[in-house]
Amino acid sequence: MDLTNLHGWGAPKESSEIYLEWCEKYLNDDELFKTFKSNPDYHNTFDVEPEHGRIYKNIVETEYEFDSVEYLKLLKRFQENDHFGNPKLYDYDGHMFAAITLRYMKDSFFIKSKIGDEPISRVLEVGSGYGGLCKTLDVIVDFDEYYFVDLEPAVKIQQKYLKKFDCLKDKKLTFIPTNKLKKVDSIDLFISNYSLSECSFDTQMIYFEKYIVNSKYLHIIYNNHITYNTHLDFEKFIDKLSPLFDIEIFSDFHNKLIFAKRK
Image (cartoon, rainbow, N blue to C red):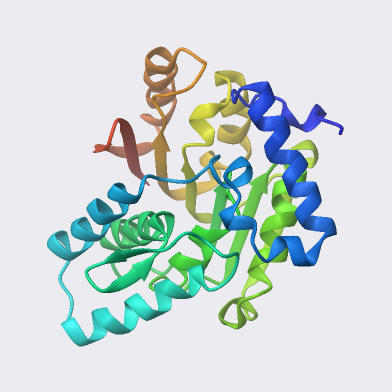
């Protein structure tokens, strides 16, 4: 397999190779793809612990206000993310979910709470896993376009997965492999949960120049468990953001969550 498109990614070589090999298998085998979420060699790259799912659900239910009937309707729509791929489901207060879907739900509610009724047309996400956040965010944020920037086999998986959902058929979904990066202008919401911080600082600055400087809002979870010098890179990253954005920094388990708005 050609791994030249791994430039800048700090994941261990062995695990990243296994992940991309499974991507290739799923792209070429539709039957195998039907169970891709139950394969730990693939899914552990972005999975979360089951008990964290309960924490995420509790955060949503204690920090955000909504009508109980409407909330039950939203839960059913969030559960659609688990209808394909045969994920491991857990019982959360009578509702069956994959833990990662509850993380996506928590992120979606957080983003909605920060942007309010501000219109969001164009979203760009760096490092999108299998595309689950796009599917989940669509439940409560009415975007028009969604751009995916990721390793080439990964964006092909995202494209294949998101075709399963009729609710996204009217959205413009654009997939940009990291070995063929192109600039995107007028981004309303830039998202990178973990992936950006798992890149070298030089690679982060490539994304900064191509996407972040063209964005109105940023939602970035900065992973503390990587091979680079996280503390120094985080401080340098914040220093780059500060002249352009009003920045809030939150805790997300052992990681840092950055939400920023263009000044």
